[in-house]
Image (cartoon, rainbow, N blue to C red; front, side, top):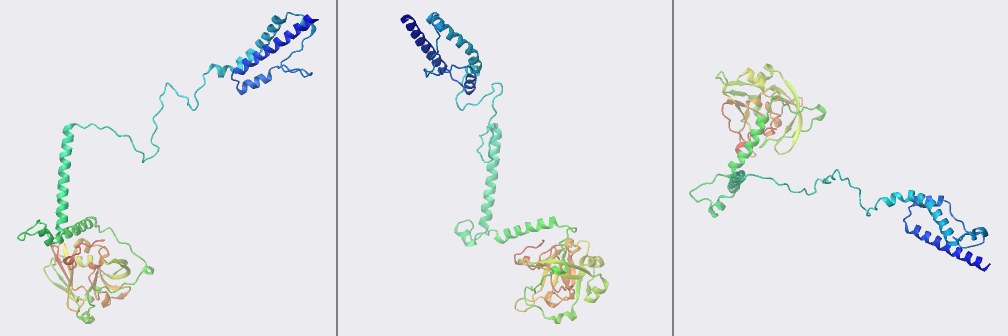
Length: 393
């Protein structure tokens, strides 16, 4: 009995050691969740109801008679052998593939990763290398230097011309016996460029907008001087000079209204001072007058005069403007006789005024008394006082 009890005790201790060794080997391997699920599904040894420690097996008297260590080790090895295929199947993906470092992303060896593009338009771009032949570089550098020098000299000359004469003499730019181009010349050239552009863009087919009677606004008396006395109206006449016939023609308001068709239009009058007004006008077309009384063949301009104009003090101050013949032939250019359905009053240039909607208001002469057709550009009242000559809109 003592021998059998000792043998049982040894068998129990060997079984516990073998189970502990197996559990340590299993714990050493990394078990993913799928492995744990597979192991949980495999058959496990349950503890005895008598409260024996986990891992102890009940040994029957028949089993106790078998060789102790060899049989027990063989049975445990068989049990581990049965479970090994399941463990290999579960753990193969994690064992065969080497773990990748944290944060690493898979890379494709066959195709290199494309370079990252700039995410923002304002992001600094990498510098680009441009190869230029030395002779080309020297040519460009010389040309740029000459252009820069010419521009600098022109800028200094233009700025210097605007300085007072005394300042230029003090700086030693000019001497007492030499003259410097006056600043008015540069200002006139700048205005002339504007006139040239407006004249180049002119077209008889380009009409200014027209309006309805409900859009008419008040038009103030804008004589540049005193308003003339209406006593000139009964004796008023329009004189035509520079005609192809070589004659001088004199017409009164009755001749004009009975011979020519009257046209109506509602347009905007734009003043150089910055204000404008919409008004209704009636009168004869300037082009109809030119057809009835053709100017001489070399004529390109018409000088429009008013002999009844006064200065602010009430003294005679004849008013005259230059008008190119293409603008005179514009379909909206009128010799107006009526204002908003009524005959012109003295305030608005009775009995006949020039209406040119494609020009500024200073070209719209009131109380016209004379038209002279000439080949060269004639004098202009406001151009002689610093304004432009063309005054197109």
